[in-house]
Image 1 (cartoon, rainbow, N blue to C red):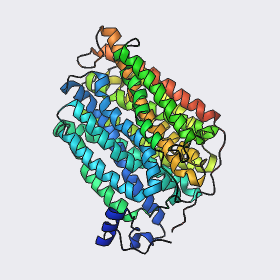
Image 2: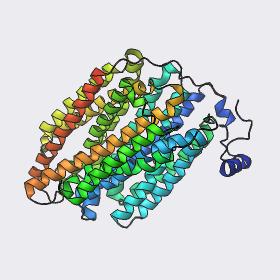
Image 3: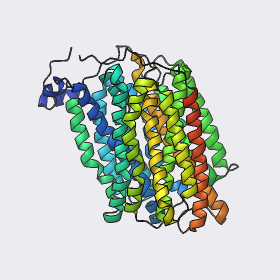
Image 4: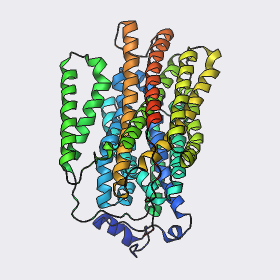
Length: 507
């Protein structure tokens, strides 16, 4: 039963939370509502919205930061990658800690850290400090995101899960859609520093709503330990992998830095997997990945987000450098992609509830491939073909919308109730690793292509439009391959019915 403690905003409740780590119950007036579970879903959607606003908004900053700081592409891309890498590294840790301490407490603290990191980013004076502050911001975002899927799954009935995850995907898509437009507007009027400061009011709203609405957590049984070995190894392992992807072209395959980084990546990944197999309470239960449908769904998840954020990385550079558009105009054009994703995400969730995940996820990735093929043809710098570029971006959003929520629902439906948190952590880690890999690989291909054509270190600043278009088409070919891989995995995924044991019972 719920602890009969005072409401969440009383002095006693706040004192117990800060001194004893005790989670207060939700506000009684909200908890008594028949639609309470949808209030929980809506509250989680605030965090989903904020995280994606920041992720997509940052993509609009990269061309400006490349010029203002006179930095090469691989260096500038760390502004986006550091945030995502911090999220991917911290989410399994925070997901496990949330099982021990409580999801509500850490979820709310995440907003406070996110606000702090956002404010520091706005005060950064160079790229190095901006990357450091983005890591702090990413750690706060990881606290928000770590158990978001688990909260949604446990708060809704089995037959509603696809719809609920579709709403969460829609909130993410709205954030993705707002990010480029907001980023472009801020860059055109206030400067890049304000792109981070605008997170503060949204973060405060999320903290208040989470404290008031999220239910108290069911904590794990006494005696469950924390996997400190895995927690210490996961960040260097993932950092080494992403550093190879992001900086490998700049270092060169025979450079000492590249060789050392590859060796460190292999070593830390091996040590992490070894620690997880030996741990009594592993950070990530690798037995989940032994289930073929779970593994296939997560690999498809990785490839789809790599493809999505490869597009988000590429298009602002082309629109600003080749089409000579303002950041605001470029952001508004790019927004059509996530708007269509948001409109189709609930449709994809409803289709998966009725027909299963295989058909909508496969169809979604095939649509993405067709959209990228259109981009390859019509992204040529000609104003006359801009309409077809917009059609291609909208079609790409449709494909992603059909894919995202059915795939998440299918993956989470395979996890037993006691591993819901771990399954959500794996899904989120693969998603943010996919985003990081997509940005890093798109940056690498773009820089390599420009470098080969110009005979210099790849940079989009002052690059001739024809060369930038040719290099962009090389990136699009890479993205088509990623979408094809996700489509193939979706097609061969075994059927996995929705589990009936994921039922939320109010305490």
